[in-house]
Length: 602
Image (cartoon, rainbow, N blue to C red):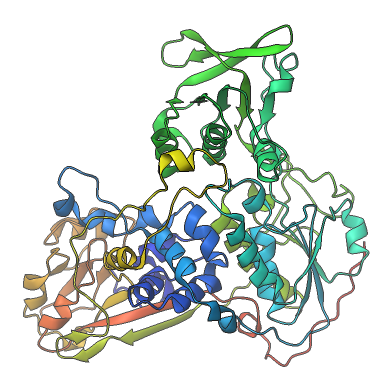
């Protein structure tokens, strides 16, 4: 194998599994260490720079970081027969939001003077608000349009209040509007042509995927009064238009929207709520914890149930008929109301098809996957409106990228070009065996987030179920983080091949072997490196013609190799990667270069 190119920012970034997995590349270990030190404002700001909505995401994120967490791969000895669990990354994010001080607003950036350019954002969801935040700080005049009276998009309309209090949405949207972003609430854009004619230099479309899929089965029309589309129903609940449900409710679908529907119906007074899904339980799209939460509240999930028909008598819904996919048996389940949550679709009836924006056969805009630019150069898309329904953190990541593209576009620079991220490696050595980070590995298992009492939580749609960690528990959970961003950096010219690091490594991660092809090398290490998704750290050729090979997959970043090394060939160096946001750092031209003059026509 060739020597590892540790100068490539992606190398050590990939070792920080949680940050690598996060669409917005939040520096997770950095903010967890700050929480462990009680520096909640600083931890919040690390999050705010990357993911914009720490309080919202600390409650509702799909947590792609947690399945990637190294802790879930290395603590088998601690848990016995239980399944190893990741650090509670998402809920620690909430800790930063819950425990921040009133002085936090002073840490928010002050926008640069206006630069004369105007940007319109269609929709006030997470993608649009991210674009607005990133561009407003750089002097752009940003106007956000939304048909509702308050910002937030599907964060506000589709996530139930028992998961996300409205006060959190108001606060974090308010931080963005406080940067000088103009919100034109209650104005739904009806025409792209008309919007372009208002003289905006660029337009960002972040209107989500607002149309829920229907199921046209026998009985749909006859019993339609008691059959609702899930996302529309959740919005009606959120805005107070729906305050009760029928006694027996069936929810169709296996995604997170279905879980929100069933748990909401339970709180609105249904005596019986049942979820029916076509797939197997393991194949459901809902996050594992969302399924567990629903079942914890007494809601059964019937998998492999294929809906066949809505049963009715005299125009009144009486039940549903299903076929059990595994046996072919047909069963009827009585019900008085059905909520359909089987997916969402994009709808752009307000974009004229001759406006210059091309769409594919699925009704999605044709976009450059990196820049999010449409076939009409001044129009960009992001979030669910770009490539279909995903989640909040993906929408935020789209917003960052689209903001960079808009900034470059309005400076007449190629929108597909991306500057490298800011990267730093800094030794953590304070003494011969002393580090500036806590490298003690705790054996504590994942701490559970406390819940409100069931009788209280299930009695109201607006009582938040999860109470969040207190400071003491947050500290203990933060200590479970393995500091994967503090890298073991090897300098081969200093190595005397004494094998002291090999002897002391608790995970058998380090080997000194003859080089070879990767597949062969992985098998010849002290402990076989079986996770092909994680790289091997391979040194240059040493004096004995061997190479040092380290399996990055199971390293604890404990620093014992560096403590034991008599020559300083090993060092613990904190790796910090910050993706480049809109502004001078994302552009090729000097910061004082004038903005390109561009006229937008309809």
